[in-house]
Image 1 (tube, rainbow, N blue to C red):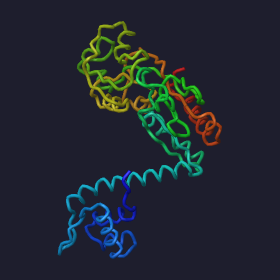
Image 2 (image 1 turned 120 degrees about the vertical axis):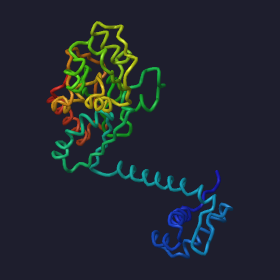
Image 3 (image 1 turned 30 degrees about the vertical axis):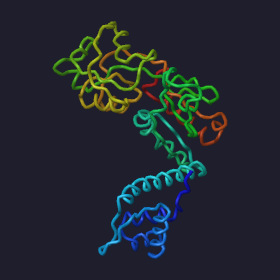
Image 4 (image 1 turned 120 degrees about the horizontal axis):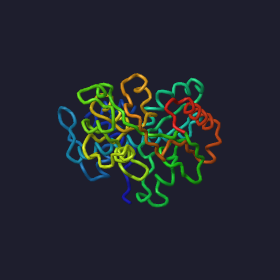
Length: 318
């Protein structure tokens, strides 16, 4: 492996290139302009390339300097992020929580203030991730990071899936069902929405959740409604359930989604569930943590709080 230039020289280059001034770079790094000039000269000798043109009016980057600057900036940014993550792992009183994106936005965030109020000494760090949805069994091999490590380096996660995670502490949080939801404007609009057959007059909104057997949710719902031949090929498609719910609330069409993620909109009347048929899913929301981590007092507190919140959930399906 080629020997890398000294880190101080690289930092000096980024500062000088950002300001096109040795003097400004020196003030930023708390050294003298002569030290910056010396570092830059050594870096240029190491690389065998000129990085700056010294002009009467100041500095100008050469083409090699222009090519080097953005990559070095990115490298220093990533180094800083890595150090922040390391400190967060070791920081006492920090609880790292990873949750599925739509669940974080639609269910957890509106409730989290109650946990923070009850445990003000804990620094809760929330990471929203689409990886916390179980993949199909043929999409990964044993040992895959998604399948084999459902906790994803967090202390505790809420995962949407089967709940079958050997070697981990798993608690079922919420069973779920899906049903059509839309803006109340569509229910009494030009084509009133009273029965499943009325859906042919409306735009169908799809998201990234599928039925237990891999079918699209609308296909499974229409079959349960006695309309297996319904055309579900048209409509709007979104990568997240929360985007589909927002589109439905804005009157763009009818989504097939989980009332458990739409509680606030259903309560306020932004969304309604006009049809009686709900389709239960085998997938649900589960609390997952490592067997040892699961015994930590902060993890126990957060798990118990989640279960208590779910128990009071008006949309809970058992």
